[in-house]
Image (cartoon, rainbow, N blue to C red; front, side, top):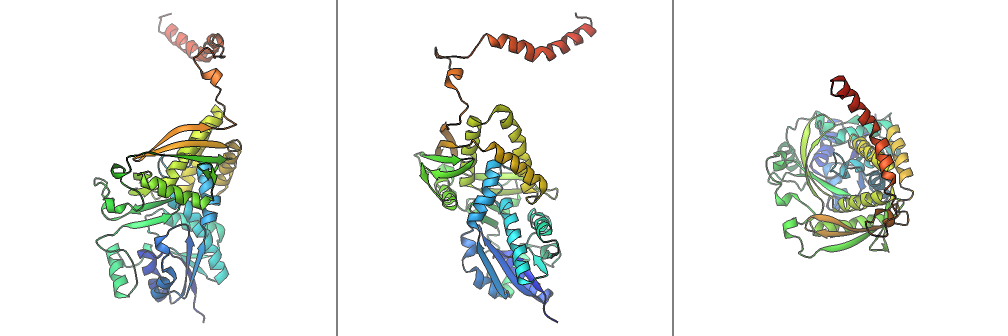
Length: 404
């Protein structure tokens, strides 16, 4: 009887490295590791060799950076998706694409099972499994971290050492780090105590704002239909744009977040994030929307932004509602073309100017100089009608209590 095959979502971190060896022994299966390159530079070094040493018979590594940015990141940016008003969703945006790659690889390799290294109380188990169930419902899913014998990351480290599995994490530095070109998520270790400030060694790509350059740096972001395409008025590719903004922003201490958040499974967690490019682009994009969009569309889109962020965070990227809301978002971005000039200084992003041929800002209407063309007399009748319901309510209330 031929061995079963398991396609494993593989990062090369502690959990997935231990998992490859553990799955091959427990299930007597051939393990195929599947890795998508979303811009996690350090994790890709020697990954194929590491997978083989851990027991994999085959490694699939695919460069998904361009697809990730153009088909996933830009959708979230256009939507203004910031989870709980803060987190740019770097990990959450990457998971549906990695799940898609995992499902496709499993089908191509004839695997009956897929497996992931997500914990039983994390968000990513939901994101991976709901996506796989949606894209390839015939595949069975194995989640070792929900039932294996290891009770802590220290237990996993001991297992890795005993089985000569190469891992970078140590008991002295037990951070769990997830990285892609849109941002980095760091958790575990001392970060689990929300009363303790994040140690400086937890941050990976950003300078402490206190030690950032004393001179500000000015940049211009160019947009077309809601998508950034230029840096300082020069055409630049989507991946390169994010890479450059991460370097520039990181140097100035932009993009650090220390967040208590509500997980999908109902608990609160504390994570720190670094996302210089994401913070810069969200700031610029939102500023351009304020210049161009009409009031009611702008107000309603703020509600949509929150809902889209929740759907992404909750693992519902491949859902009808997500598709419908992103279609609405796209309709709001047709005129979102222009440029925004920003100043970066010691952790702060300040808007200096914004410009667009579709701008709804009319200086003659806004000015308080002699160039003013606003009809001030029209305001009297407008305010009477606008406030009429509330005036009527108050009159009735006072009449009922005998005041009128």
